[in-house]
Image 1 (cartoon, rainbow over the protein chains, first blue to last red):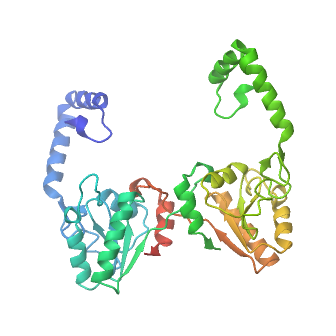
Image 2: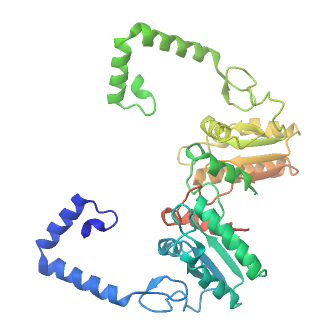
Image 3: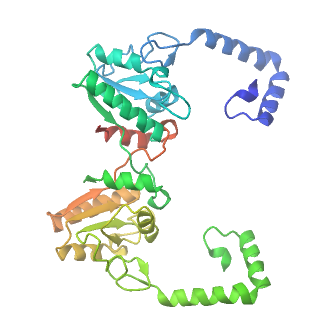
Length: 188
Length: 188
């Protein structure tokens, strides 16, 4: 079971298991209890699908956040990354994946209907597509842009800038990034 | 001597040395000759400082390239990276480094005078600052922008876009990149 955790191979799982077995009272039972409590306490937010102990989640119910800007992300890990960076002061919408012909992910497999319903409610001014800079991410962004332009032409749809990452040396960048960075160059 | 090459440790240098010693006629002498010939043939371009066997270099003398757009890079490896990506159709200017208070690199240590002379000649319309996305790179870009605005206000100074690189998953990006990508988001 432990070996099914990400970052745990069979070898490290064995080490972790031995550590637990050597201290059942001090580590194993508290961990079991803590996992059980957390599993029972968490639920996905019915609005944005973030994982929290309350529904709607802390972000959706925070009155200090901009209520009219929604950042669309692929998964909860992306939402957490943006929150860690303290860069987005609006709300989120977790899609639960990106469209993929290869993996057989269709629009109805993602939380796209929920997104269109949120936008149909009419309080959203801007939708930021913070999807991964991959082919599937770009496909999903295209699809969403088309849907949103038809559904709510007044809503601004933006996407994250592509270019050279912070600290990036040019000579280790891939061609696509260099091309995007040069194409989207800006006056200083 | 071999161990002073980048990517060569003492161990791999010993392996390379043994390989050379075991085949003096087939490998060692041809390599020596080839290194000697190349060392004698190459020279830095007196205009852009690219390394070539002719001066001015093949890029500076290519009439099919845009003569009025100059891309400023830190080093020759950056120039080669941009050429590999086939993304820039203008000319280049190699600075030979970036300003650095820590490493004691001052403006006069870089090829900045040569750049201002090129721009003073009056045929340049745009200067693209393709400097690394580091603190020193940004400092150098600021310095050059100020100098160029005073010297030639009609020349457009641009810099590469910063943001998420191609194929980039959001949850592994650093905070600075996420902030830059979100700030520079663009309508789709």
